[in-house]
Structures are given as structure tokens and as C-alpha cells.
Length: 192
Image (tube, one colour):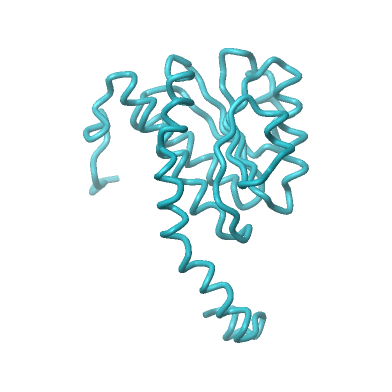
């Protein structure tokens, strides 16, 4: 709407983008149908004491959210970082005991994410990647890959969120956590 008002998108482009947004619920259903894949990944890593989540560009906030969800319901230390900053400190934390969740759907920063994954692997890290269906490059680099349907880059965080939430959920359940009542968390905050 705002882009149309400011004339940065024409009517046809606005319609096309809205059509893409309308497809999101169906694409999320496709992800949910493959929940068992996430559960298998969770079974491999639920005993980890630390996790690192990496994202770039529009999916850096996805990395932060993935780490937050894991902390909130599983009580496992997790940090989200901008992948481009990994060399400035966080890379020292990488070892075979700290799984790295790399958020790498098709995007303008995809090749840079592949470089980050290579850096993690060179240091013995284990990588769980979230990538776009049909991606063949990432399969050769990551230890585990969960594929999401292809969408325009600006919509990818909506689809990326679902496997990240499912991963946190299944890790918490495997650790015997009460996911409906996480400790020390309220449904709403009324006092600051």
C-alpha cells in the first residue's frame, strides 16, 4: 500500500506481491507436513548445551528469533548473530559440540551465507541449514538441511520462522520441558 502511494511500485507489481503473500498459509502447511524431518534433527541435537543461529540481511532477525525461541522453551543457551560479523568474535565459539543453525534461503546474500557455512565447517562445526527447495549447493556443505518453499526474498522470514519454532519445540519436548508454561515467562508484561 505505502509503495503504491509513493509510486515506487506500479499496480501490477503490487498485485503480484499480494498474490505471493496470499500463498504463505499454503506454503506453511507444506512445511508442517514435513515436521518429522525437524523432529529427527532435534533428536540429534537436543543434548547440546549451546546453539548459534546465523542469518544475513532480512533473515538476521530470524536468527535472533530462532535463538530466543530455543532459550525460552528449552532453557538451552542460544545466540543469534549476523553472519557477516561471525569473524569478529563468535567464530571462537564454534566446535563440534555447538550446532550452528544457518538461515540460508535464496537471497541476495546467499553466496555470503555459503561462505559462512564453509567457515563453520572448517572449524569442525555442525551445521543445520534452512534453505530453499531445490538448493543443491547447501546440501554439500551442511550436515542437515531443512528446505522451505521458494518465495520472494522479502517473504522468506515468514517461512523460515516455522522450522525454527518447530526445532525449538521438539528440542524442548525431548528435554522434558513444559512448552505450554515456560519458567519465568508471562503471557504478557504489565510492569516494566
